[in-house]
Length: 99
Image (tube, rainbow, N blue to C red; front, side, top):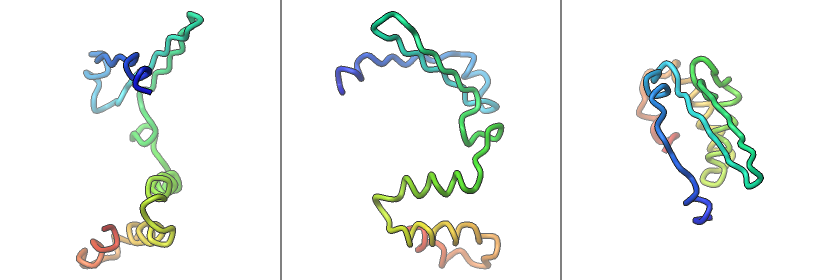
């Protein structure tokens, strides 16, 4: 893995930097051993206001990130409580839910 990591080169492209925060552009180029080059450019990644995530996408992402740390019940409780934040008068009892 380290041998592969040493082959990675990160270069700033000023046009992406200049467009920030309207765009979070990035480009990935992979040079294959047979000489081919694969290029992928994304100007508005998933979750950007111009490429928004649905509530279901966000929930699924949280479930995936939390699955090895929290029980399914705890994750669902966090989702439910977060979706009802606008009904709360006091945030003090919310903090233990997300801790």
